Length: 449
Image 1 (cartoon, helix red, strand yellow):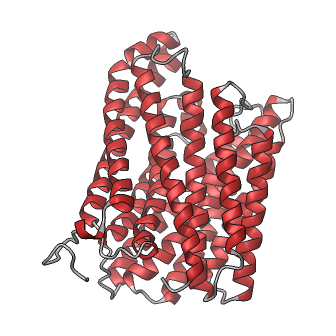
Image 2: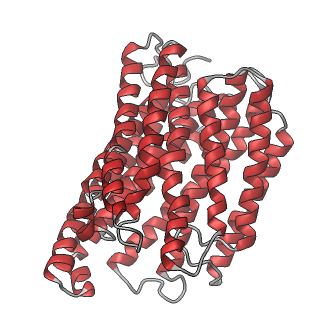
């Protein structure tokens, strides 16, 4: 670690991992309610658990992005962060807002819009925190060296912060409401977050493989161009059935088909960089997470997204467990695994603990990735059966749900693997002491001391 102000990232990563733990436990609870619908029905209803599960996911991913920016921007800009005090104030606002939102949900106060349920004061708090971040990180970059990685990262973070303004727009007309809602939800995860993902992945591969910066930057610009080209008009695949003009069925189908391209390029980019790389970096776990992120993102966001993005298919499949399969695998690959890659790379440096226990970390990768892959296949089969029974044959919704119970039980089993993997990851990164460290291939348990 070259710059003292990079230590700000440690606080962000620790808070992110705490919320990560809450998020996966919330998901496990929600998964069990599918198996046993009356579980906690009066004490903690399903809709509240689901809000906590999805909101914790979004907030901890954002904390990971912000922390990653505070870690990599000083190295890229070759200067300290403009203000570490502002960075800590931003973190405090985000954590107070998160706790306030969860507290509100537990007593039944929420906005009712999926993913945007936060009370108004929390939404304003998030906006203020985003503005603080943009000022702080932009001042750092403007005063230092400019690189393609910081340019793309800043573009992505500026755009996702500006798009948050649409979270405040809630018109009475349901079609307009859903349109503005997708401006936040889709244009975050299928446009601006992709820019952030590409920039962070480029930074990690630059450090882990030793490939020339010029090669990384060329790939990065191509990925960004395809992500924006496909992602913006690809929003139309959400406009099919919400009351907007019929031409969106063609615009959405065509452009969302191209959304496979940037994820394929990111996967190819990651493996080509490792193949071309000259550096034998000791942090093999970080490289595993980086390659895993780009690969699973391609299948989750690219392949599984394409499976039901054409309007002729989507007419039957939208809102079924096929959507859940796509959502889980794409979020895990594109953003969860990427954040865990950054944590794996940065935490040993931030905590002065190299080398650290990579074996446990790698086991956590395979547990989580295997669990999420199995969950995706289970939900895909469940969604296919649900589509046929409910949308083609016309069976009653609850009769169909009863028929899917075996799939929900298997999904819960996969969820256990994911939770165990998450706990193992947090333990390997935060708890294991240096005296307990084992590095793969090392002759002694504390090689490098």
